[in-house]
Image 1: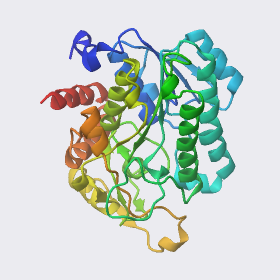
Image 2 (image 1 turned 90 degrees about the horizontal axis):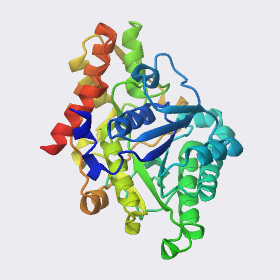
Image 3 (image 1 turned 45 degrees about the vertical axis):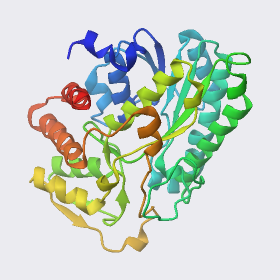
Image 4 (image 1 turned 180 degrees about the vertical axis):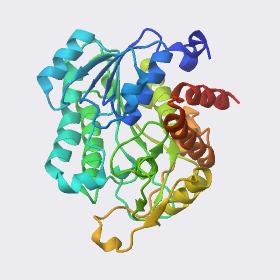
Length: 364
């Protein structure tokens, strides 16, 4: 797909816009920056250095400006923003792992809560900023193990330190929206629209993070080892990484257009029938990649608590943003497995091909 055609997506709103992405070296962040570059945006990423080898960010050889820094370093973050003068900020920097949050609770809370607050505070000081999209998590909800999906109006909670930190990040988002970016004074007292996004478990090529199902499986295959599967009966809203990213970009378009009614919280997840158990996902991968050998861990009581049942209700995004999932779970797994097989067997990077296929399928 020619870049000029790509740049017309989202009404061409991102072309020549200055976009700051925090956490751009991570899995989801690297995919977002890649797409933004194709949209013609001038991107600066602020993040810690990649913490895995290999990693998607380095493999892409992106053109964006990169500043390595901690989101909690307010002075450095503010200096970077004052110099770059972004139009819009996508905030993805976080400690993203549930199990790690049990071992490093203070670090998790510090990064995910105070880091978010410091970003918002920096945005207040940078006059160029028009929109902020804070990416939290579906785990921000008070999980009651319901069989139906959580809506944006359902209570915020958090059993484990990670989930609690994301619930707090949502509360801080609401606090700043009410206190500093109030919609009633938009255009007179300030010019910033602030929204938050809650997405489910994302999969796709290029993720080698610890303690995640697909990366653990891929790394086990690469080492010819057995993949150890915990919580096989847990249900998650699985989706390809491009699904929520498309939602973030649609939402960013609305905010940059000054449509203040979209400065709210939004869910982005798969259709209800696309929620599968961990074991069902493993079986589907095994069907596509015969090299996979795995073992279901026995005593789950020795594992830190993780939610067993978690679904999102995305009716709001489907109705008001006109967003909808493009790839079903089978397509998402197929694209993911194909990406990793191409990388390990041929050294190919299929990121651009996947993005092109996704856009073409979305148009259909």
